[in-house]
Image 1 (tube, rainbow, N blue to C red):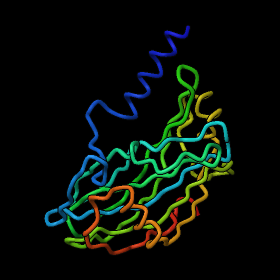
Image 2: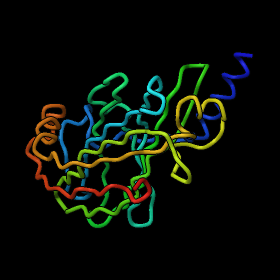
Image 3: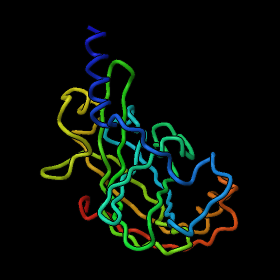
Image 4: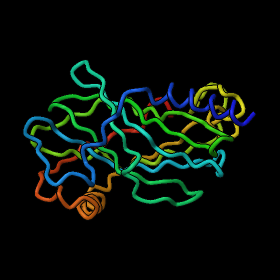
Length: 214
């Protein structure tokens, strides 16, 4: 029975993550220098926590954006700042795109217990942001908290697999969202975490709370 379940969970993971390799976020520990002459970079801080099922705190996996009619995905799994247990996890997120307007689409997330529970969902930011040439743009400090869903509110994840999604609080949960401008504090932490980023020119364009979760 466990073998069958393991195969099923692997199939679900393939559906959600796809077979292609997703590149790391442009701000990462492997970089020794940064160049924004061809593509601009945006970054922010995000905390995701689950008050609907506190035992299943989600991990952030990928960020998807749309620029010049093309979709791009970036992995942010290795950009965790801190794990606060039942108070969630904090991450830096970042992406790169040509200067101009870019649609920040969604963050994918996962929670579970190996071979027992596997739940997947998404936090839909769905906002247009302007990136300036030669600069790194700060988008804000986002807190996305999973709470109990009521009526026709947007769910964190799909209905299936039925037990997994419900136990993890995804199919019966929605997001309560807060956005703050902590530009100075977050920039200081970014430079401490990724020293190679020092010397770049920074600006800010704070995103709004997503209309989907108002």
